[in-house]
Image (cartoon, rainbow, N blue to C red; front, side, top):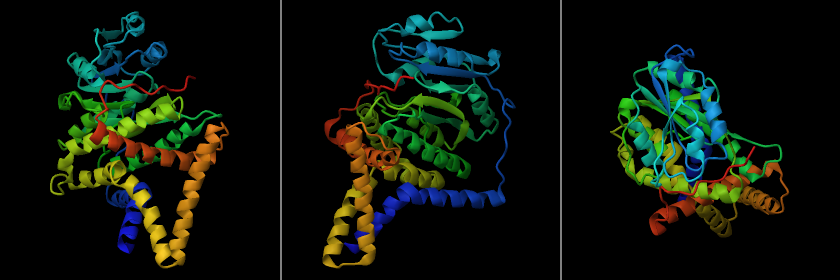
Length: 390
């Protein structure tokens, strides 16, 4: 039991803190021998297509269009495609008013990934950029992304996701804190070797490397980028090419999104299991296991196990170190519970967002795993989470 306790505690620490420390140290060591290459915006501008898949986005589509048209990139090298398959509101009608944008629309909803596959058939540029309809890019985002492709080893580029945190934010603001930490890890991952999977808010790929993922894929953006990484290409990262979005409308909406991501994470792990072979791509495999797999599989279970094993060991033999760890665990979970209780009463204390959201995320992972293996409720035709309106 003692061995189980310490091994489990180490894995939990490594998953959320230790890997960041190891990654930072490895990057610092690498910099002693290889200096990072500084790329200049606009130094390389290959032909580029921006694809936006929009389903019933009437509330934001006009703002998205204006944001898209303001992006800085050579107009003779830029193609804009909006695909609105299945939309039954006036999203297609609004887009059709702009001749600069190629509109693809058909009745019947078959999911985002099928809409993206259809849009890819219209692409004849070197690079394709994907972004969501409810996120807004900084005006230099395309220039920032494009410059990385001057390196022939780069097969995809991920931008940064930023979540707006309102002054009167509720516990969903924990998503913003989480993404700030995630962004640091992605930056170091990319500098060490490669980002492990891109987020759909903003990412790009070399068109000739694009591989159509299975039609039932839940995390299509993640899988599209990982398939390119598994071909031996790197996924670069640029924190100054960013997509800004509001946090989820409430925790109920965030719950839907997180559970879906967790289910998709398990599906992705199964479909990328080749990376667990240490001979295949050892460095990418190490990054993948450390940054993604542990979070999406055993660590949430170990968090529960450690509490009970800690209590058992203390009951068997009082030990000051075990007592301190137990007090620390109970204190952390008490803060999370207090955050939950206060949130229900609409009393918001930001310092409690972090423990509350952390526990909330891990609970969603457990639900997502259960749903994937035992209920099969996850579908590509998903009910997207509602975002706060600005």
